[in-house]
Image (tube, rainbow, N blue to C red):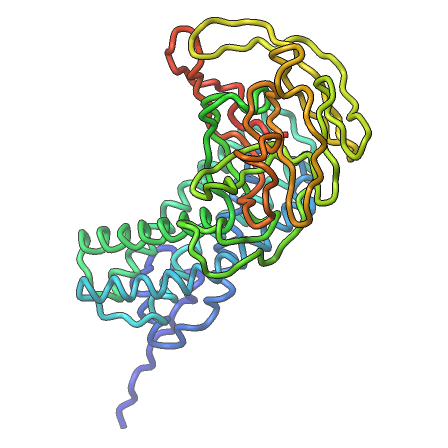
Length: 411
């Protein structure tokens, strides 16, 4: 009787994926393509979100609560993106003549980043050991740089391994694989950008000086949409899908708010919220009064104002502190100006009173026929951070970037 030689044992995919990604994915798909993919997707999401930790942070920082929160968010994002990418690669692959099923593509997308996941784990363990051992600053910098280079190399190899796996499953050649891969990545980036803009953050810019000195002409800033919940005006093109707000939370006095102009909802305004529903608001000799009490303010150094390229002039500046402790600077361009003394305003239920920080040069809720009281539904979101600032008011008109304002938190 002739014995049939047994097949040689196959290496574990955790080992073979490093050097034989194409053969590895074929064995995985032929066996159980769903095995370990959720774990790998979660770890891949964590590695993508936590890669910034490899920069010499202390061990205490590595174990802080916000690092744990980032890791948890990365894990959820990794699992969700695995299924979204799997569908996109299948649909796009069919257009290019691909043969793989979505479950097979998810296996490739989960196993491809395995070297990057392992590399990040190694880097973090070594970084923690380095910090705990109390190594000298020069040694720490050298080793941290080496870890960053290693993490970058493993990340690049993970990308190549993923593309090799996808090519084997789809039966694509090199250029079709590359084109197919980056088409899907581009579509995913577009979807992510649309989701972010619709539900999380939207960019705005400051075209006029009504919010000086807080926002200058040429400031570009992000507005977060989730603090107040969502209305039709939170969504692109303001579709009338529902009325009021969902997941609503009340804004706070002192918030810098972007809202739709009540008389023309196609226009966005940014002002400071000073009056809540039921409040009485009045300007008396340039001083803001809320519910009959003057808001605390103190004179601070003059503001160097430039406008329309006419040079610089000093403007009186005040530090104003609202009853809830929010403090900010305001400008006083004109003594006894038109807006310095107003009628008594009573803010209706479900509405808010808005003021510009540049008190003598702001069209805001003091003008009832132009802005007036702002309905809760009209709030778009809260200004958070400046991501770009271009000096459009400089006398030279050069439009230079104001690097000192980039990354500034809006208060």
